[in-house]
Amino acid sequence: MYGPNALAAHAPHRYTRPVQSNATIAPLEIKLFGGLEIRHLGEAIALPQSKKTRALLGYLILKGTPQRRDALCELLWEIPDDPRAALRWSLSKLRPLVNEDGVERLSADRERVAFERHGALIDVLRVEEVSAAGLEKQSRALLLDVCKSCSDPLLAGLDLPGQPVYESWRLGQQERSRRLHMRIIDELTRRDDGDAAQQTALLRRRVELDPDNEDTHVRLVAHLAALGQRADAEAQADISRRMLRSLAAFDDARLKSALHGSAKKAAPTPAPAPEPATQLRQQIRFCTSTDGVRIAYATSGSGAPLVKTANWLNHLEFDWESPIWHHMFRALSHDNTLVRYDSRGNGLSDWNVENLTLDALVCDLKAVVDAAGVERFPLFAMSQGCAVAVEFAVRHPERVSKLILYGGYVSGWRVGPDSDFAAQTEALITLTRTGWGRDNPAYRQVFTSLFIPGATPEQMDWFNELQRITTSPENAARLLSALGDINVADRLPLVTQPTLVLHARNDARVSYGDGRKLAMGIPGARFVTLEGQNHLILEQEPAWPRFLAEMRQFLAE
Image 1 (cartoon, rainbow, N blue to C red):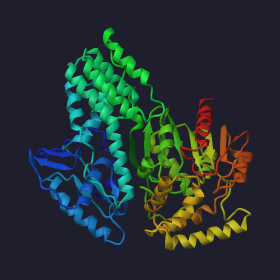
Image 2 (image 1 turned 90 degrees about the vertical axis):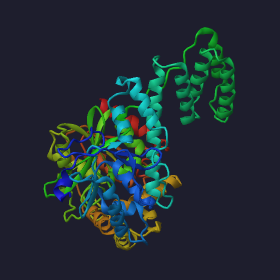
Image 3 (image 1 turned 135 degrees about the vertical axis):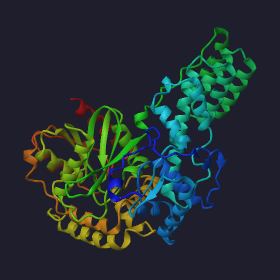
Image 4 (image 1 turned 180 degrees about the vertical axis):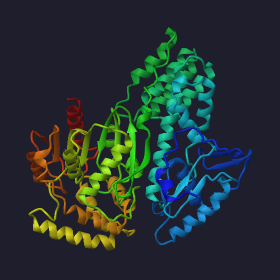
């Protein structure tokens, strides 16, 4: 059984090789492609009838890190039920299926639940390990084997329509495995060591996986034409035309050119460059702050480090999948090793904490960068995270090379001169304690409308749910209250690092004037105005490419 300290020190095992134990481990095979299936010594094991129980095991396996009990309850069960009792019942049904004498794969303590692999053969983890080791380095036989493994949809049949956050995660995992499947096929078809029939089958499968990709259709038609199978190539060209003609950018000349290539010993169009593995995953670990609070942090991408401070309500796992944040985190992971973390009181970090002061938040940031092993780095911050970044940069100038501050402010609502805004915030704190955790998102929609008024309905739904599962009503109220006392006005002149300050002109949450005040207080800071009203910058708004370009240029200087 895990104890609290063991869980705090637990490192992700998802992308490591199977753990070897001194105990004799009987072969256990777990399949997640095509639905959940468990075999022991080759014999299929009967699974619980409850779909949520089976979904729970799949979720724990794919997450690969300890999960909070309350987060699992929110994810898989409705509030009117007794989610904690349902979780206990599900764990009691799953333990006998995966645990053996001397080998405890599924374990739990009062706060968290964890699944550890311990020699089990898990199809999706095997496919990801092969990919992480480099597809180009693997034998054709191995690639064909893993390609066959992922031929069926991941977590098929484990849909839970009544649980939108879980469903979004599940669909995201399916999309991720689909892209990995396509990368494997692209690597196989790029080589010339396979027979013609096998290559044809792979290219047809590639079209099935990505039917709107014109390049994929052209490759298949060109391949058939190159084999001299004129009738098959023309038939496929007709099928492809019907599938692609609704696309605005469809170019029929490319299909015709692929057909004519048969007389010239034409080769298939080169496969698209595979998506870098660093964009497909993050690794979550835990560290301990100066007062013993456990802080969850994540790393993603590769290259020089870039550290992001925590802001209002983060959740390392759900942010990674959400349409609110995924574009930013993947973009920032493209050229850098992005380090980010959940602030104390929310996400995967400890919720039951006493101290929510600015000093404690700065100590949390130091604990994260120390644990991640980054010595000197540019520091990126948003919203109230800007005050944390400023204070950290002043205290530890040798650690911070540059500051990038977006949507920030100098002083909190209780310190500032706007008495009306302070009164409104006090009222919000009172309502938060009673309305935050309810199934009806009407109250949380108030925050959503302030943070992302220009969001799509899907993005708003995501943010409504994200707030509910990220922290408790009491913690949300305490965080709001604590932010009112922030004041770094006297620290701004002490900042010595090159600083870029960006702010949306019509930010509905933090005023444009607050952003200007922040920039004016820091010596030599560059100020960039973005056109928009969203406090959290969204992928579809024109301000996003401007923001990214300004940030990349500043980092490159």
